[in-house]
Amino acid sequence: MNDIERAIELFENCDTVTFTVTGCGEESYQTIEFENVVEALEKQIARKAVNRCAAFTIAQCPHCNGTISFHHKYCHWCGQKLDWSEVENG
Ligand SMILES: [Zn+2]
Image (cartoon, rainbow, N blue to C red):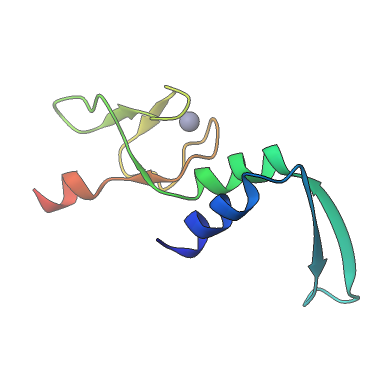
């Protein structure tokens, strides 16, 4: 389990969370609604592009089903991180 998966597991049972924000000037606190955080975190876990065309030039986003171009790191429709490893490895 990586850090993102661990964070999702931790956050799933909470409604809001307060972060301490550091490293960007003054320290501040931000409270975030948790549903959104989990969704944002889940998009950081790379998912395999689906329905790749035979020429491997376009495929479909596994999150929003939007059409995506080959080897884009993130879906430009919804921000889902994409995994193209299956293509690269064989
Ligand atoms: Zn998408």
